[in-house]
Image 1: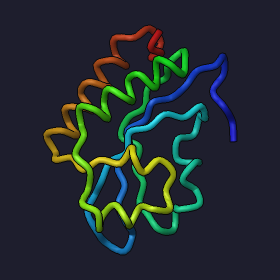
Image 2 (image 1 turned 60 degrees about the horizontal axis):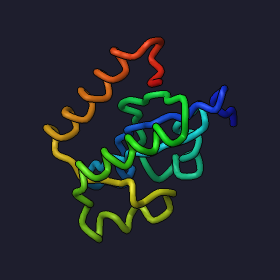
Image 3 (image 1 turned 45 degrees about the horizontal axis):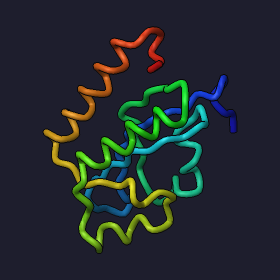
Image 4 (image 1 turned 120 degrees about the vertical axis):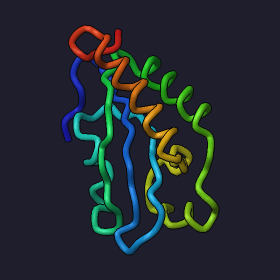
Length: 123
Protein backbone atom coordinates (compact mmCIF):
# COMPACT_ATOMS: atom_id res chain seq x y z
CA UNK A 1 0.00 0.00 0.00
CA UNK A 2 1.44 3.36 -1.05
CA UNK A 3 1.95 6.11 1.48
CA UNK A 4 1.43 9.78 0.70
CA UNK A 5 4.61 11.57 -0.33
CA UNK A 6 6.47 14.31 1.54
CA UNK A 7 4.95 13.40 4.90
CA UNK A 8 1.43 14.33 3.80
CA UNK A 9 -1.66 12.92 5.50
CA UNK A 10 -5.21 12.48 4.24
CA UNK A 11 -8.36 13.40 6.17
CA UNK A 12 -11.32 11.40 4.88
CA UNK A 13 -15.08 11.31 5.27
CA UNK A 14 -16.72 8.04 4.25
CA UNK A 15 -20.21 6.59 4.29
CA UNK A 16 -20.65 2.96 5.28
CA UNK A 17 -23.40 0.45 5.85
CA UNK A 18 -23.64 -3.30 6.47
CA UNK A 19 -24.25 -5.33 3.30
CA UNK A 20 -26.87 -7.39 5.13
CA UNK A 21 -28.89 -4.24 5.84
CA UNK A 22 -28.81 -1.58 8.50
CA UNK A 23 -28.42 2.12 8.99
CA UNK A 24 -25.89 4.21 7.11
CA UNK A 25 -23.19 5.66 9.36
CA UNK A 26 -20.21 7.89 8.63
CA UNK A 27 -16.54 7.73 9.51
CA UNK A 28 -14.17 10.66 9.82
CA UNK A 29 -10.55 9.62 9.93
CA UNK A 30 -6.94 10.25 9.02
CA UNK A 31 -4.51 8.07 7.10
CA UNK A 32 -1.03 8.39 5.68
CA UNK A 33 -1.94 6.13 2.76
CA UNK A 34 -3.09 7.22 -0.71
CA UNK A 35 -5.99 4.77 -0.95
CA UNK A 36 -8.47 5.44 1.84
CA UNK A 37 -10.47 2.27 1.20
CA UNK A 38 -7.46 -0.05 1.24
CA UNK A 39 -7.41 0.01 5.03
CA UNK A 40 -10.91 -1.50 4.98
CA UNK A 41 -10.15 -4.25 2.44
CA UNK A 42 -10.56 -6.97 5.10
CA UNK A 43 -14.17 -5.86 5.59
CA UNK A 44 -15.21 -5.28 1.98
CA UNK A 45 -17.43 -8.39 2.07
CA UNK A 46 -19.31 -7.12 5.16
CA UNK A 47 -19.81 -3.42 4.43
CA UNK A 48 -20.50 -0.97 1.62
CA UNK A 49 -17.96 1.86 1.65
CA UNK A 50 -18.20 5.17 -0.21
CA UNK A 51 -15.59 7.92 0.07
CA UNK A 52 -17.49 11.20 0.17
CA UNK A 53 -14.51 13.54 0.41
CA UNK A 54 -10.85 13.61 1.35
CA UNK A 55 -8.33 16.37 1.94
CA UNK A 56 -4.55 16.21 1.87
CA UNK A 57 -2.62 17.98 4.62
CA UNK A 58 1.09 18.69 4.78
CA UNK A 59 1.41 17.31 8.30
CA UNK A 60 -0.13 14.71 10.57
CA UNK A 61 -0.81 17.36 13.22
CA UNK A 62 -2.89 19.50 10.85
CA UNK A 63 -4.90 16.53 9.58
CA UNK A 64 -5.55 15.21 13.09
CA UNK A 65 -6.53 18.67 14.32
CA UNK A 66 -9.30 18.90 11.73
CA UNK A 67 -10.31 15.29 12.45
CA UNK A 68 -10.59 16.07 16.15
CA UNK A 69 -12.62 19.22 15.48
CA UNK A 70 -15.03 17.41 13.14
CA UNK A 71 -15.47 14.51 15.58
CA UNK A 72 -16.22 17.01 18.36
CA UNK A 73 -18.76 18.95 16.30
CA UNK A 74 -20.45 15.85 14.92
CA UNK A 75 -20.50 13.88 18.15
CA UNK A 76 -23.63 11.75 17.75
CA UNK A 77 -22.76 8.07 18.02
CA UNK A 78 -24.89 5.31 16.54
CA UNK A 79 -26.86 3.36 19.14
CA UNK A 80 -24.96 0.52 20.84
CA UNK A 81 -26.56 -2.25 18.77
CA UNK A 82 -25.68 -0.44 15.56
CA UNK A 83 -22.15 0.33 16.74
CA UNK A 84 -21.53 -3.34 17.59
CA UNK A 85 -22.01 -4.20 13.92
CA UNK A 86 -18.85 -2.23 13.18
CA UNK A 87 -16.65 -3.87 15.83
CA UNK A 88 -14.40 -5.42 13.16
CA UNK A 89 -13.39 -1.98 11.85
CA UNK A 90 -10.42 -0.01 13.06
CA UNK A 91 -11.22 3.38 14.58
CA UNK A 92 -14.70 2.73 15.90
CA UNK A 93 -14.47 5.98 17.84
CA UNK A 94 -14.54 7.82 14.51
CA UNK A 95 -17.94 6.42 13.51
CA UNK A 96 -20.82 8.88 13.67
CA UNK A 97 -24.56 8.88 13.11
CA UNK A 98 -25.50 11.93 11.01
CA UNK A 99 -28.63 13.22 9.43
CA UNK A 100 -28.54 14.50 5.85
CA UNK A 101 -28.19 18.14 6.95
CA UNK A 102 -25.11 17.34 9.04
CA UNK A 103 -23.57 15.25 6.25
CA UNK A 104 -24.05 18.06 3.73
CA UNK A 105 -22.74 20.67 6.16
CA UNK A 106 -19.51 18.72 6.67
CA UNK A 107 -19.17 18.00 2.95
CA UNK A 108 -19.68 21.67 2.09
CA UNK A 109 -17.02 22.69 4.58
CA UNK A 110 -14.53 20.09 3.31
CA UNK A 111 -15.14 21.08 -0.32
CA UNK A 112 -14.74 24.74 0.61
CA UNK A 113 -11.39 23.96 2.22
CA UNK A 114 -10.29 21.93 -0.77
CA UNK A 115 -11.39 24.48 -3.35
CA UNK A 116 -9.75 27.39 -1.54
CA UNK A 117 -6.38 25.65 -1.08
CA UNK A 118 -3.55 25.82 -3.57
CA UNK A 119 -3.34 22.52 -5.47
CA UNK A 120 -5.94 20.99 -3.12
CA UNK A 121 -3.39 20.70 -0.32
CA UNK A 122 -4.07 22.37 2.99
CA UNK A 123 -0.86 24.07 4.06
